[in-house]
Length: 388
Image (cartoon, rainbow, N blue to C red; front, side, top):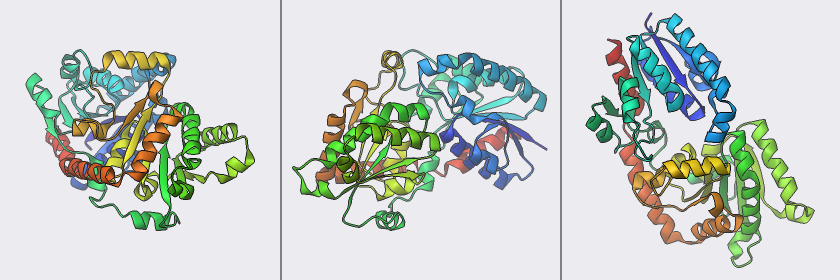
């Protein structure tokens, strides 16, 4: 039976990998999959040799802390994959981890496909020569990426983004509110502090203080009818956020008056129900854009990681919606600019400026149409061509 090795590094990669495996199995039921998989990939039949959680580390300082373990895991994984003798290797995102594996496997005659182009368009210096040595074929999710690879002689296919295929062009806000039992006249702000524990630790206090400032704003009577929703996917992240609530809202009356609900999951439903989203930079910004939701993008990280990032990055924006639009469609408040008052001001402005929010929704509709390409089917066709 043809065997495909596939490695994803975090939840967003697991989602992409799950879609791809399903599309491949629809065309070839005899395929088997082995590597590092999350729950969505495993649900499609992938065998995971290691826990995906071991790769879910973000930020330069954080990676350094776990470097020995990551290098040891990667060497062990390579040994096991060579023993499995796959016909093709697919690296789903996680470029620093997967490019090394791809280079080693490609030298042994195994075709390597990298699913999700790294942000070569955003970083100083050249990574293309490293990519060319490692990758037999690049699958690009963004429309401006293929030209960069074609120029360097790297085979590439633009496949669009799976989220654009999944999400409707016209989201149903009323249905989402009905499902979450939210009154029609409520102003809803959804706060997404990140999926990793380290991200929630960086943003929990910030988001709680921001919600407190907005809810206590007496200049706009609408804000007295505001509801905050915080979707979190694990007990650990929920506990971090609840601790921040207790720590920052000492006064019981203030605590009771803040209409803030923590949800177990339901991030998609919450965003669809929202008037404005406050979101930590990452894949969630694209999902919010595809749901046509005005947003404020923010991010905090350890200072050393931030300075390394600033040195290497040369685009003026970090959020995918702004990158895709090529301009600041929505505000970004990062690191030192990410203060409770600045975030509260930015969110409040989007809550009251209807003309601006309509402009943002039209920009996001244009982005959605450009990314809607039936991506899983296109990706599967590329993989199966190499399998032949």
